[in-house]
Image (cartoon, rainbow, N blue to C red; front, side, top):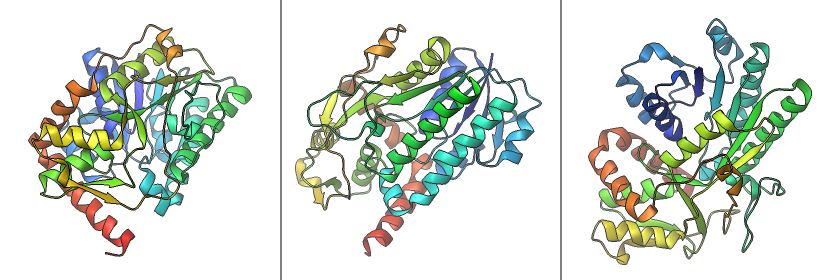
Length: 327
């Protein structure tokens, strides 16, 4: 089996390449190398002959792959950061909707019989006390989550119109090595390593469902191997933490105190709580193995040991943030 992995030098995509390597599964990868970290990962990658550099929204570039026998596609390619989507929604439409449409069209034309699309639990929106199941109504709050919900509808149309074998995965909030330093955990770590404070929106009581990236990778592979066509699968860990609890856990791991928490104005449309029921994927035989309290210190140590992979992106993020806030 040969698997095409798109977004292969993004956070989860790169971890998935490593996972496939560990399983001795043949693959090729596609990435547009937009971020500095993805460029650095590519430059240090030992099997460049397996990697193609282009944007999946470019159908002409995609068609160059038609001579390769591809058995399955796993699509990680996406713009993912909610804050960025608030200030530049059009880039999310291009990547997360148009890009997915081009990729599905390529799969249809080339009779690729297994397609896994990576979505997000954010398509369900926020809830105070419920746990969303796969058939729960979509209620996205941000341009990011709306673009991911839209991509799912496009996938559904290809299933119904063209009878394609497409499966959807909705992971909860991921953390772990190689994550770009714009998300809560790596941004907080990077700030502290640069003698700054952790920034927390509003009172920090927003609740997130935390899932280690390696558990996500094993879950995606389970769906690729055993999932049913036309079905969606939530992936979670059952570990729920408030943002302020995450911040304090990071500080504790670095022997720092809560005086280094800076409460900032809340972002527009900020969801209060994400929560999913993930019994369905367990029925395939998958269970999460990683524990947040054990993996967070390892994640912090990874960022301390790999400054070269994230420092340039972090500095760009700081500059973009200053422009957004008029600082």
